[in-house]
Amino acid sequence: MSYFYVVKKTFESKIFYFKEMFLDNISLVFSGLFAIFIGIYLNNVNPVFSSLNELLIYYFFGNGILNLFQRGNVVREIERDVINGNLNVHFVKPYDFIVFKLVKYYTHKLFKVIINISIFFILINMFQATFMPLDMVLRAILIIPAAIIFMILNTSVFCFLSLMIEKIGRLHQTYGMLGYFIGGGLVSAKYFPNFIKFLPQYFYFGAPLEYILNGVFENFGLFIIYTIILIVLNLVVRKIVYSRLETNG
Amino acid sequence: MANYFLKYCEINLKRMVEFRLNFLFDIITMFLVNLLFYGSILYLAYSNNGFGEFSFNDIIMSVTIMQLAFIVGIGFFRGMDTLQSSIITGEFDKILVRPINSYFHILISEVNLKIIGEIVSLIILLFLNNPINIPFILVFGIFSAVIFNLSLLLFQCIPFFTDMNNEIDFFDLVLGFSNYPPSIFNSFMKFLGFFIFPGLMISFGPIMILKNPSFAYVYFGFIAILITAFVIVFNLGLKRYRSAGY
Image 1 (cartoon, one colour):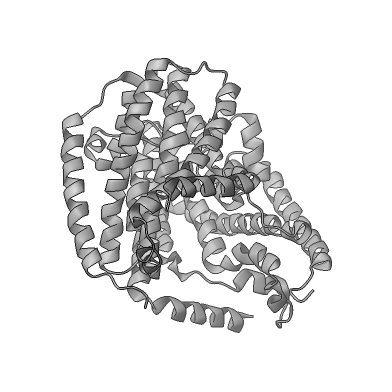
Image 2 (spheres, helix red, strand yellow; image 1 turned 90 degrees about the vertical axis):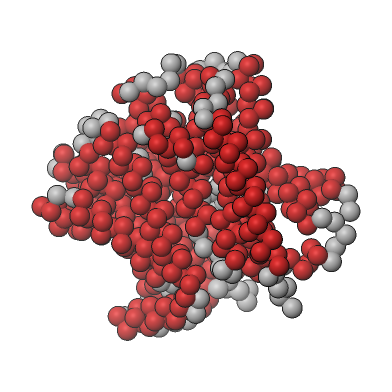
């Protein structure tokens, strides 16, 4: 089966339901807007951004893109399939299950990102800020995929753990939200105590956003160590789960 | 009525304890989610000496009122969340043929007992408040729950007229507004947050009454408008409703 076909079909269905998707995104845009408002307020009281433009770029990437991926990622989709016994549908088909899921899921997300970015641009214009230096765009292109991969590795450990006890808990959701609230997604991580810079969640919100703005990736060594640990944990836990897997038959 | 309500609770409890570990997991994690969320908002309020005209104590009170309204609304009257889908699928027929009036069944047809996690976080929040304010919080928490339920129900009545689901996540928008202090918003956003997606009215309306008693006219006037609007819209909707067998 051609993965291009999956991309094409997913895009077609998204275009068919464009209005629904657009409206569905409104609450997401508002949550980004709330974050911008609280960011502006806090920055007036205790400035951590040098200009309004810098602040808006921070929230554009944090709430417009990273938070979108944080709100549910492909591992959770796979978890649901495993719990519901839907995996056997995929196992008998001539394509790689994980690649298929990744292609389908991220085509869907890409569409949401495009809508979100468009709406965000309108909002940014409402605040009348100039937008956006090329070096920041290049740094964003470099770091955002890495942040998303780290995010998936991080969440998937919790998903696989909940599969080990054969229950869908919300532990990984709590864990993900921790990233948004104090990892520097909701407001800049600079407002929180320094210890949060050692949490894994900081590396898919605060650290990449700082890198985009200033070109400095704080605690890079720790980021590499966490990545290695997460890869090993993922492999071990995944192996245990798959060895115990039963189809719904 | 009380018998019906208890029966609904019993049915829901039986359904949930079929999957005990899952039930326990949900309770614990929802408690953690709440703790995290309110913890981060309260931390920001504490480290900035409140937000504008709202002191740290005002923020704790508003968060507690919001949590109480949310528990009453979503925990014990969860049925309001399903009105829209029941209209679309025609399942609303079942409600119309039941004894006692349909308002009652819409509200209590689903009781979400996983709310226990939120109740624990509410108790913690109540302890953080000044004890003198607790009666005020309990009373206005109930009024805010009325606003929460009525605004959500009003929005859920739209499919009576459009025959299709509302795509906008009204619930998320109301909750979103309720979590932030009005002082961070401009006047347009304040208007949206107080009157269109009334999250600010739910969480900060009572605090505004404390600061400026004349705001009580706006708060209770808004409740009266919501009740009137809901009764009118619901009854008009019922006249238009076509059952599943149509």
